[in-house]
Each structure stands twice: as C-alpha cells, then as structure tokens.
Figure 1 (spheres, rainbow, N blue to C red):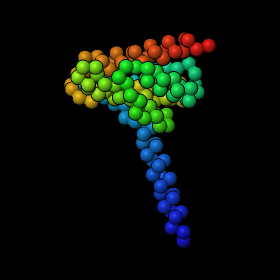
Figure 2: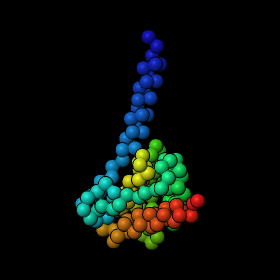
Figure 3: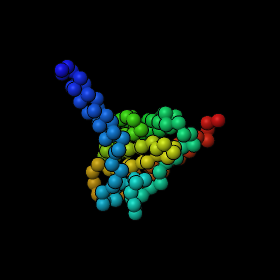
Figure 4: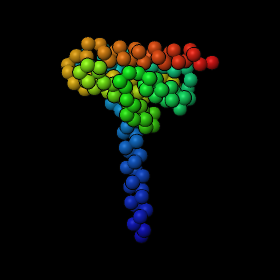
Length: 143
C-alpha cells in the first residue's frame, strides 16, 4: 500500500479542519465591559455591519481597505470569510482585536474586544461605529 496517500489525506483533512475552525471564530464577549459583538446579547450587543453588494470578494476587499485606512490598525488575517485586525491605542499602546465574518446574505458579524483591562470606556463600540460610517460612505460613493 502506498503510504503517501494516507499521509496526503491526513494533511488535507487537517488543513480543512483548521480553515473551518478559523471561519467559525468565537464572537462571544467576556462579562467585562470591554467588548462588543454582533453575536452577543445585552450591553455587549452591536448591530452587524451590512453591505449592499452580495459578492463576498467585493465585501472582503472593501472591508480590508476600510480597516487599512484607519489609524493604528493592522490587518492580521484574511482567511476564508473571516478578517482579523489589531488596533493599537495612541498613548498606552493597548491592543484591541477586531474580527469580521462575512455572511452569505451580505451582513458582516463584528467583534471588537480589548486584550487587557476591565473597561474600554466605549472605545470598541466607537471603533465599530467608525467602521460602519466608513463602509456606508464607501457604498454611497460607488455608482
């Protein structure tokens, strides 16, 4: 029996499992008030983002461009339908993680969470509001 075939199948399965795991990112928030998510409930909830185009690649391109246009924002991952980024605060260099998941209906699940501290003083909610405004402006400027 050819030993390469089982190994190749194992590697393919592992890669598919890893990709699926990334696409099924955790959008829950901790109890502390330093996170907002479109999949959370209560005070952590924020509306998902929306995009008029339904083409996932067009949405993905617009999201990446919008994130890159933000000050102190670094896009750290763009796999499958999930985009991740890290925002760094101006003075203390705190890191916040942003995760976006493009859904088939054109909505975008969003999570913005501080890595440290108990409260973010509304920074994550403001960040998502800024992202939403930037996306809306982009959509209205396109024919």
